[in-house]
Structures are given as C-alpha cells and as structure tokens.
Length: 384
Image (cartoon, rainbow, N blue to C red; front, side, top):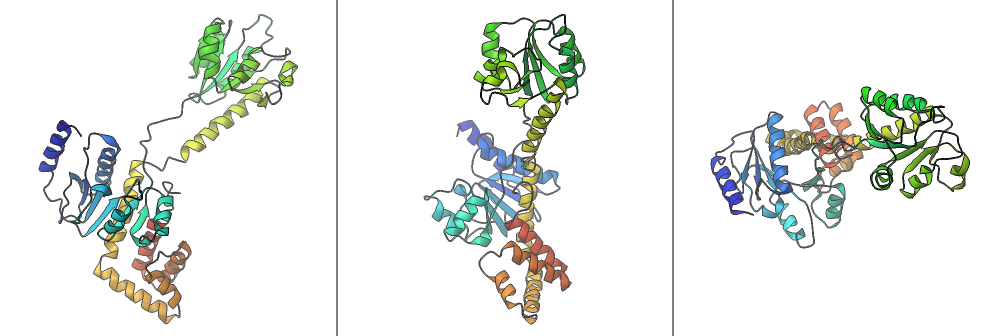
C-alpha cells in the first residue's frame, strides 16, 4: 500500500466517521479503496445500496454502533462488532484461516461466502450452518462478446460463377453488429458497400495478399464460407489448418478430408440458419451471467440483512414461538424441531413450513421463512 493511498484512506475515514444513524449500513473495509478488487467491492456495493434508497457509507476499519447494519470487507481484517447486526465477507478460505473464520462466526451474525461449494465444504467441517450463506461476485456488465468473424476468400468473375450477390443477400438477413464479414479477393466492392450501408461490419482486402492471408485473415475467422460448386476452394484446407469452422458445399475435394466440413450447405441461403444459431447460442451463454451484476449483488445483501434484522426483533421472536406452538398442537413436532434445530432446514422443510404459516394466518412468519429460504437456498439468477 502506497503512502499516498494510506493518506487518502486516513482523510476519507476521518471525514466519514460521523455516525450514519438508525437504519444506516456501514461498510467497513481494511484496504485502500483505490486499488485492488476489494476496493471495487466496497465502492460498488455502497453506490448500489444508495441507489436503492438505503443509507450506506464506507469507512476504513471503524464500525458504527448507531448503524443498523455493519458489513466487513474482508474478514481477514475483522475483529470486533459494533452494530446490532454485522456480517462479514469471506473469500479465499484456507486451512490457515479456518479457525479465524470459526471464531468470527461466533462474533458476527452471518459470514457471506462467494460460492455454494465453499459453504458446503465449511458445513462438512462443522461450521454453523445458520451463520453461513453465499452471494456470487458481480461483474460490471460492460463487456460484450466480439462479433463472430465470417470469412470469404475468393475473387469474383464476370460470368457470376461465385454467385456473390446471393451470399450477400444471405448475410444481409443476419442481425447487424453480430458479425464482422472478412472478404479477401477482387471484385467485391459493390457487395461490400451494400453490407456497410445496412450497418454490417466488413473488413475488405481488395487483393489477395499472402502474408495478410496467413497472419491476419484466416487465423482471425470463426467461420469460413464457400458457397460455390467448382470442385472446391483452395482456402478450405487452410481454414482447417487454422482450426476455423467451415460452412461449405459438400463437393469436390471438400469431401476428401475426413470431418473437414462442419456445416454442409446446398446454397447460399443455407448459411443463414447456421450463423443465426451460432449468434443465438452466444446470446444464451452471455445471458447466464446477466444476473451477476452489482445491483443484484446489493439486493442479495439487503435480503440477508433484512432477514437478520427480523430475526433479531423481539416482536418476531414472540410470533415465531406462537408458530412453533401451533405446529406442536397439530402434531407437527418433527417439523417444529427441524425449524428450531441448529442445523439448516432443507428447501422442502421451508416449503412445508411456509404453507402452514400461511394457513395459520401468520403472514409475517410466512414472509420470514420465504426470506430465509432465499438467503440459504438462493433462487435468483445470481446464484442459480
């Protein structure tokens, strides 16, 4: 840590140590905010909590007894508790840190891990289940997949034997921005301009240049396309040598390379569903991480904190006792025991208990059980 970083942290903490007050959330950090991934966690969490309408500040190494919630990033610097409810972020668990984590779980209300696997492993080691949950890390949502590179390596002829207009018509039906079309060869000027006017990206090499072909053209492709019928394209074996997927006509020497044709086509229009499917698969893959964003990260923390605040409420504790009493009256002592036990109830126990609480008209109990199930068995896209 630089001297400048230490000075900035000290000044920032000095001017932000005023109590945040009831309902506030204090994020307690132990490293320089400017540098490293942990500083990013602190800044982004505080910003999203504020955007969600919660009072939240971030101070180095100092909690706030007047706050409703304290949250430590990271557990390695955590030692004491200030607020009524405090949690700590836990990451990079090792044999050397295990006993410290065990001790901290006796101080703080919840340790928030970064993965289900780590929580499961810690449970096997005997750490308290009700004091461990997990929230997956966030990503910024600014990285987008690059366009798929689709290449053609041939020149056109006056007799139209390459059927250049048909393949351009096929490309024009694909979504603009999803692909970059790379063409090497004479005679494609008109077709290239049509693609560009329609908003498509095109890299056009007006002449065949062997050095460019070998170094920057062929190896950069995701798909090589050849749609003509004249015994084969000399670029086809080059595409295979570059490990580029091939969309070509099944004819001539194309057929003589075992497994060389990834996608056989009969005409230029056949290219469309192949490339459209590849684009859709990329969108589906990228969508898997769409929920792993900083807003969802903050919402998941609020869920945990609101759950803990309710658990700590005397009014809630009285209503909970009434719920357990009614379960026992209904000869549901085993369900009551499962909920009141030190071990974590399974999802099926939660579902059954929620139904009984709703049947009794105990809406607060049903809501808290629903919240608890989401804390320990998160259903959101971030932890799905």
